[in-house]
Image (cartoon, rainbow, N blue to C red):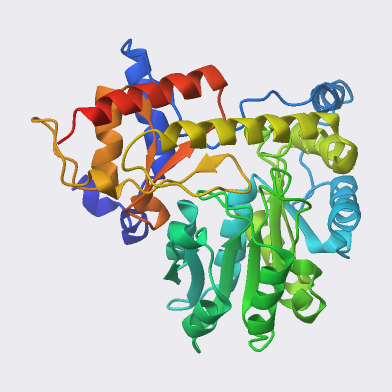
Length: 402
């Protein structure tokens, strides 16, 4: 009876795999298990002091009332300035929509543009929520598979082959969650060459990991003149400024898309929290190229990446590449499929993660939900000591498999 009350829409989607593993980890910790969580996509840094001070001042100044649906004008102006300053992009404040996290920004876009059966091309591996957000909007995710041998990079030929008369959008993410893949300026221009032949296909560029880039300056496809009118840039302050809990994301989009997203947001959440917006204003006003905070964060993540890769290389059967951004490694663990410790058999990456959670007390995320069942996602957004201990435990547990 209760199940019948629920809509087909909600029954068709799955729980976020990353949030599921986070929930499981917390439950086991509450039971007294010593769980090391390498599952959550959250910087283990604190929000910068000036940002916190801005929030406190907003409270003292009584900026505690409803904000405009698309966000405060000052924040939208600051985001437009940031896009020009950091990325060389020209947007008016009216083309910016501020939302409750980049996840809502993505949902707004796809709810605004998709009709039943419309297709969205996405490279796999992809962030766990992409496919379900598209499904909620009654669209169809057309998944293009990439592989670890090619650093999980999509080729222009693969993109061209996936576009049909039903294609409404192309969604990609650089730097990438879960792979850490970063596309070069030349590779992004090659995508643009394909997409400019399809002017009715919207390009949704998820750039939330923009600042966590080990390969040089971030490149946005919106900087390519030939396709600039087709592009929606999705970004936010969660990753680069360790502000995950503040819930501020945004889009920069063609005016008709921005207007549609504002219309939708007005009926669902209205504007984001006023205090969070004032904190985000201070974050985006900070010139990132001069930010000691950000340079330190990126340096720490790069050091952890190098250490984690070295440790994983010492475990037989785990295949890695060298990610150039974000704070994840996405190794192929299919070597262990079919193996058993005598009581538990590993059939796939989900089993692999459940085995390590139970036997090693280490939480990873299965690659199934990212569109690549041969892999698992490991987050190194935690201390070096915990990373070392986690990999030590993983090695011991995997040695028991035959």
